[in-house]
Length: 308
Ligand code: UDP
Image 1 (tube, helix red, strand yellow):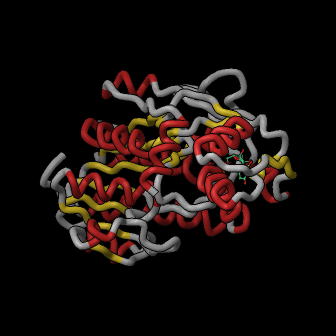
Image 2: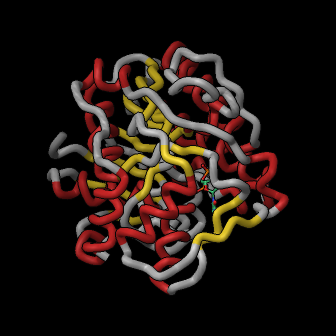
């Protein structure tokens, strides 16, 4: 992927900013659309190489103008973070649904034939009980965020049928890496470990997640963007299950911290959002593009700490 005009919504956020840097490095004209809800995470040296618009994705007129002449759109703008979503379920859904419709219309009115969408492994809800989840499994979204993401996946399927816009929905499994903020567990634990404060593990800490390193997620995303045809859904997962207690211990080890692990009750608003077990299969991704995430959790954490 080179010499393409690429629009990235949410391109200043955590995943988006990594995608922005990589696509600039590859020699593309990158246009970032972001309302900077969480500041601008794009590295300074990259900021001068992009076109930037502080615009709400829901603003169709603005999006239609910005997307003119683009070859491809990555729609990564979203409201996320369990605490924020739990406090703002309606706003979360509105941003998802209105944002997607605005971006989809901007694509079809400008004759842009490819759209890559950041969905979520949250659509699986409580499904991942005994196995890693594959894309074929029946999903069970429980939250406004996950429901809206699932709705948009279906919307994209119809966008292909009706308007011929090719798209991919990426179901990201707990992506982590540099520049992520402490809404998510890994940066939060690293912050606590570096400060010597207790690591606040919610509940028993036996719940699991599949932590996927950002560089792997970006590689997978770009492979899929190149090969997108029709409408497809892919897991972006590391295929490894780690308990939150394990995670806390690994972070204490890699930071050589004297912090303790403290089991506490999760804030009540998190109750509906907690999933006991979640890990994914990247087999479909691997079959399609010959690549899947492999960075081990402790290695990914070491890279973050060295580059910090
Ligand atoms: N978690 C925790 N302590 C914290 C923050 C999160 O034990 O201070 C746990 C949380 O209960 C969940 C996991 O870490 O099981 C991942 O939480 P996060 O909010 O990063 O993502 P989620 O997968 O829940 O969307």
